[in-house]
Every structure is written in C-alpha cells, then in structure tokens.
Length: 181
Image: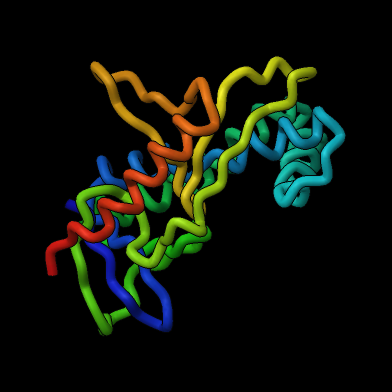
C-alpha cells in the first residue's frame, strides 16, 4: 500500500523506503529520455529546458548528452537516498517536486497502486511514437504516472492497441475507489 497525504492544497506521495523511491522513479523519470527523444526528432517538447541543461553540462564536462542526463538524474537521486537512509520520509507532488514532509496533513489515504488519489479518467493520456520513428506500440500515462504491469518480474509499458493501453489505464483509475483510510 502506498501512502498519500493531502497538504498545501494537493496530494503528495509519502515515500518511506528506498524500494518505494525506485518504484516512483521508475514510473515518473521518463522525462529524461523524453527530453532526448524530443530533441532528436526536432520536437519542441515540455522538457526542452532539461535537454538544454544536459547539453550545457555535456559541453562543460566533455561528455555525451546521454551521460550528462544520467548525471543530472543522479544528482537528484543521491540526496533522496541519503534522506531515506536516515529514516526520513520524502513527499513527492505529482510533478516530481519533493521535500522532507509538509508537517500537518489534511487527509491521509493508502492506495493499492502508486497513483495520485485525485487522478481521474480524464487524466489518461495515450501516446505512440510516429511510424517514421518505428512506433508500433501504445503507452499510457495517468497524470505523470506511467501505467505499467509487472509480469514475471518484467516491466510492461507497451500495449499493441490504443484500446488495450486505455483499458489498462482505466483499470488503474477504477482501482482508486478501493482505498483504505
């Protein structure tokens, strides 16, 4: 079960362990690869500033942009691991912003899936790479959370049809009704 607290007008995922941290990162840190893909395809994406930061770091350190992107990701992850190792919680908002707790929560709920409690069916987004980029599969996100299944320890994020991807995301949304307070 995943703990979420409502504070400062929004829901926060309360991360209590390194295992939860890696699961959260696994579902949300696609922005690093998306920034590279957008740049390579000439698309002006929402992560273009992230790409520019990695590009600047790559030039400064004489490394590739991919290595610089990994370094940027690591520079955020390292202090988070240290915080959790010291027994503290990390509170994440839906956009990836984080802190070491907000103190008093207006509400606390526990979710079966790692998905923010206020996500709705309207927050489902289905995407596919273009045919020119070799896109054959569909991907689903609910808000900023990537919808995935784990089958025999393998992470599944691709579906063969738009309907299949939407249906998996919809199942996540429906499971929001199964919460423990």
